[in-house]
Image (cartoon, rainbow, N blue to C red):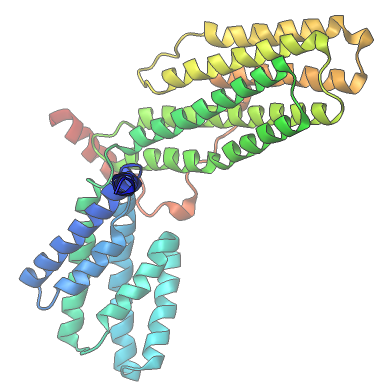
Length: 392
């Protein structure tokens, strides 16, 4: 009897720890239910098809749902035409099914719908030419497809508590804080003496941080794409967040390089007693700077924050370099080179955090790949956005 409450708490915790996921599947379920009701009310036997399309099209953000929903509407309409033509030429059978799936996949590819929507288009086209197929039935099912996609677009607005810009800030903050925590661990380990196993754990954690970079990049790209067409979204803000995401990306890479350097150092015998304290202090300074800068990155108001934070990191790197040069005559040349590289990495972290590095502003940062741009920023959409902001 004593264990039952604990089991219940653990079961509830499975959902409370996944609040965003629970919200998304709840919104999808409600969207499917509403699509079923409206589909049956407005279209002959349209509830099932509308519910299926709503379930397939609802995404974690309104931007993705509109992009993929729009692509699915166009693709499915074309797919329905392909299906009708194939049925007229070959009758309903395996040839029609094969041609429909093949040509719908080609259309989805041509529209750059992405992996998920590329599957949805042939699926919904097959639904259109499913059992009890006829011209009226095909028209009704096509209408149900359009209705289901429209409902998915509407409900996707509620599937996430924040805007794409808000989610970008969360991603940047989360990754930056993980970097700061890892540097703090490395600082403590260096100060108290670290083993090859310790350094290996740091390097493994740093590699995991690097694997999170594509998530931040994808979210920042979504914020930029969303701001291109959504009336209340500020494109300048999205651009700034994207630049900050790139700055954090560069910081993560430098942290991984430091972790690799410490691992190589541990393999070769460790850091000498004379420079251990200096390196530990420099890493601690960098950790504090990242934590503070991440707070500034979460505020998009046009100012760059406190520059003295990154100046402290540069000074810590300079002090480390000076100490290493003083002890150069007694140090192993390879070990000296590794320690100096840590000072260089610290300077690059500072340049990345205050976004003064030429690598950030003189090298073009890749935008969203062309194959992902189903909805682009046409001149008419910019005019509509200006009018909307002026009056609303």
